[in-house]
Structure formats: structure tokens, C-alpha cells
Image (cartoon, rainbow, N blue to C red; front, side, top):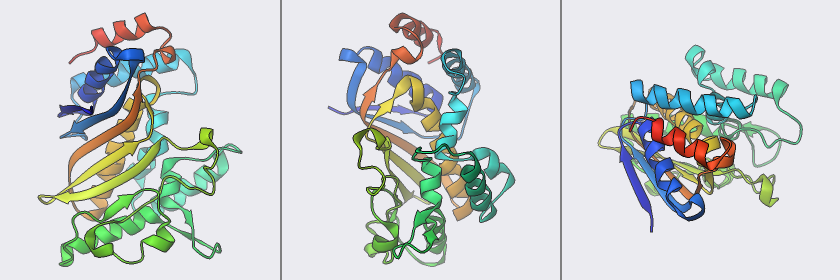
Amino acid sequence: MAKLIASESLGQAWVAAARHLAGCKQRKDRNLILEISAPQKLGKDDLKIIKAVDAALRSRREDLSVETVAGTIFPNGLARRFSRPELYTNYLALLAKGKKRSSWGTYAQRMMSRPSRNGTGTINPLDDLIERLLQTHNGTKYQSAFELGVSDPDIDLAPPLDGHGYELPVFDPSRDAKPLNVPCLSHLSFKITNGKLDLTAIYRSQWYCQRALGNLIGLSQLHSFVGKESKYECGVLTCIATHAYLDTETFGKVGVTKDLLAALPG
């Protein structure tokens, strides 16, 4: 059965989900759903949670932090300095200089740059999605046609599909054929609900100690950017992990992780 955790803030949602996983067999569960009503609102308890998890990550690996995980989804630092289209240009240029060979890149890169159908250029699915959302202010009534998923945007997205589907891909079958190279974030779906912009993210797999909190922060930042650029107030952020795992080895031991979770607010 699916497990639903509803919370106002992303920090509190992460703590509740991690504690739930701590009580599951092998610390694993399927279809763990977080529904966060105010994902951009970070209170004192959220900041305390983020600081504690970040310290636990950095104590084990110098190259891993909550911020670096969030940055794979959205480059929020650059977004504070640049709007469209300068954000895309600057981010892709920096990534081209710093990306490691043989790495599949970041989710943000896949949202901003995909090969065109004829292979001679690129398209920007994220910008296309924002432009579609902007059209809804001028009489276009689509509410659930703004997706980031598994399709080929240059082939499948030309028509609006009668309001029922708009895909912005994360998974790329031409690059992700090897099982170990499949990205964990599978799909992003934006919806207009009562005048607000909701975001639903679906993960095929999510490690809660190493990645989940950074994922939630990155998603909230992407959500905020799309809302700002498309002139919508942000609504609910929903995150669905079809396979969720409390990877206590990331923090060192089971006991260390349980002590950390017990000490956090919520």
C-alpha cells in the first residue's frame, strides 16, 4: 500500500518519511508519497533539519552535500542572478566546462537542452513548458498539460494534446540503456489548480539519507522558478518515490541515523 505523508514544509516531510522508513522491513518501502503544501517556506525547524543532514553528509564525503544534490535538479544560485534566457546560456556553459567525462549530466541539463529531431540542433523543453504556461493567461485553458517525463519533446510535444499531456524528458533511452545509468528522477508534472501551479515529481528510486532532502529542495527551487517565470503562485509539491530506501550506511550506521532522526524537530 502507498504511504502518504502530508506536511506544510519540506523539512518536516523529510523527517516524517525517514522515520517511517526506519520502521519498515529492511528500511525500504514502495510508493512513498510526500505532499508538501508550502514547499518554498523554510522555517527555523526546516533550517535546523537541513543543517543537520548536511553536516552528516559532509562528515562522510567531501563532495556530497544537500546543496550539491539540489543543484543537480536546478541551479538556484544562477537563477538568483539571471532570468530567461540568460540562465540557460550561463548554466549550460558552466556545465560544459565542469562536467566529468562519462557522466550522464544533471536533470537541469536535460530539462534545458535536448537534441532536436534531425540531430542538427537542440531544443529547450523547460523554456517551452514555461511558454505554454504563459499562454494560459491569454485564454488557453489547459490545466494538466505541462509535463517533464520520458517522451521525446521534439516529436511528441508539437501539439498540445488536447490538454492531457505535455512531456519534458528526464530519461533518455539513447543514453540510459544500461541499468546502472538510469536517472532516479523519472517524471515531472506541472498542474494549474485553482489558479496555483502544482508540481508532482516521480522517482523510480530514492535514497533518503543521501539524496531525498536535497531532491526536495531542488524541486522546490525549480517549482519557484517556473512559477515566477510563468506568472503563477506556487501551490503543492508532491514527491512520489516508487522505491524508497533509508540508506543508513550514508550516515555511518543504523544507530547514528536513528539518533539523528530522534534529535530532529517534528
